[in-house]
Image (tube, rainbow, N blue to C red; front, side, top):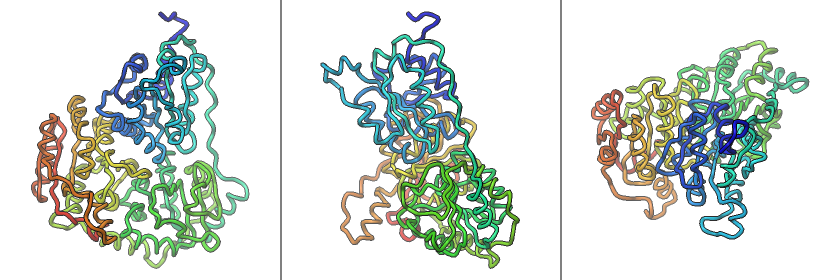
Length: 540
């Protein structure tokens, strides 16, 4: 029994996470993490039982997007921890502050016992910002370090191995004094004067805004900066909505669409100043590599971390807060007429023509129908595949985090758990998930979790019985059809069997009726949208 002056080491972790704003943890317990789960619940953090640790990691990510508190993934030792590896690697590449709490065998026991024993830190070190093994004497410090590292700079996952006996070990109830939170600064001196001079001289500036700016909450400043100085904005897929996409200066998202790039890249090439604001090219296809020469075009890079990627280079590189940097630069610049030949409006029209929304049926018609039938503030999630590329170009976001997806790692099986995590933590929001049929099958078991939690997202499934994007690439290389086609299943029936609603649709009218019913249902709805093979040809 602990005395009033001591608590369990697991409690030290849980209390620090609660103080950081965490209210949910996701995972699947084993005997090795029972103390940890008990500590989380005692601290006021509800443990959500999922069907697979990979899905739990994505639900935890969604909780972070909606609440601003780090996500928590709990996994037991061995297979439990390894099941979560994909979502942890995704958190690393998609800049998500995810705290990974994994049970493990005590060090003394591991020296003479082999069942389910492996070096979990060796597994997690390459895919996290840091990995710790909890010890009683440093429980408070490790908890604080983990949160600080997960949040600072570019956010990312941090792993903590929690040995069985350590979780129960008594530690001091009072944590050490908190460390000072580092202050983000803005450019100053010659760098600031140079940035102001370049901006003041520019008549064709463009901003490329990315995930750093979104994570730093820079939306309002980005919008004000763009409006004041007449600068059009291209965003990565993760940063969609940081400037409302109905704005006259918004050029939408870029990342994986060769079709969109045929219009966006020539526009960037005509710019005389490129401002990369929190732009992390981990989201971009190789077509965005070295698309400008910083010796010929002025390029200002404002990022949360130094450039070690070499996807592009800059003339002026600033490691600083995006919002503070833009405010400092704008403070000394007089607005002028930019892009005087109507290039911005012409590009917006060209992009609209490239992605028409008037198809009678097919992927574009499904996306367009959903966008018009669902509220403007709907949160959408997308799985990887051909539909995601089309969706990321067509789906309008009027605020940040209006479209959630795996953009750095591009992993399948993320859309459904992301939608569930959003609906759990923001129940007042309408939430729609867009999956290919293959991605849906990967995580269909989590429909049971949605039913158990009483969650009611809308799950849209594009049904063409094929890995459409891979099949398209296969045909593009004139290869034989192999390993991309699979059975045509009744996805609506799966939804009904798991405790929700299920509808199969083959036209816009039926989809509208299904969406109307789903919006008012107390249960989740699976809408299986049947489309023809090859529906994405020439569309992405």
